[in-house]
Image 1 (spheres, rainbow, N blue to C red):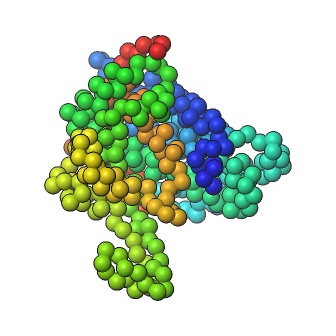
Image 2: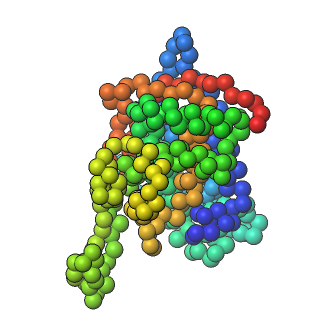
Image 3: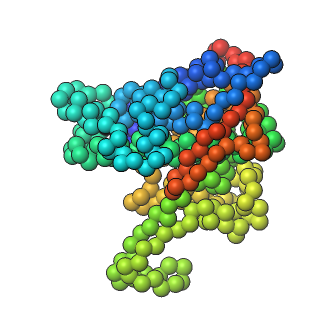
Length: 338
């Protein structure tokens, strides 16, 4: 599966993601812009999930489902997710896409994640399950990371101003920034890490079964047959690792020069994406989305919370459902070349 998720068999992965971002910013330009004479509330919470869903569906099926264009819950996708209905029964796009590819012949199909699965001889039933879970789990977790980090930025004026200054001094073009260029923005990288650290998108314990002979962990004997997990949020707020202000959004902690301290922080931070056999296979897609989202949003627009006393509605059921995250968006002038 890693060949599909990692993009090895999708050479146009970044171009596809860029296309989805351009469609999204065009929608904002047409439907979400406020000005000196009026305010148009824009639910960035829902809109962000429409964006991530179109990104994942385009990478999975070779075309987006169409959430951004309609800006509504196409096929009842989000309703299915949020009400925990049987996913496979309620969402049949995966089944149809597999049948179409098998009828056409895999060798003639476009390069996308689903085709990659089938080319590697994954059974169609397994491919259907995997691709459907990817659509639901991948879109929600990435959207949560984007929304939570954005909320921290909008709630921290010095941080917001600094990251905007960095982005706007380096990104002037109307074209979507390339990942390699976004990753050179050191303060942006610190903000992304700090947002994920304080608000990891998955709260599950990611349990492992201790071998029957037992094991020794941190000097403690653990009996065999026990399910052992870890509290991601607790570990990522460990004051021994991240400092006495570990509960505070302070991206500057990632810019310190103490290499040993940074190494310890990075080691714990990686737990955001899990590890071993359950490490997130979609890390590359999430990395593209996180970097492009903040650059494209902050270089094109000035943003402000509409309801600072209650900025959003957030409910957690292992993963987060977030909506009513209303912001005010004012368009900035961009150079048309560069």
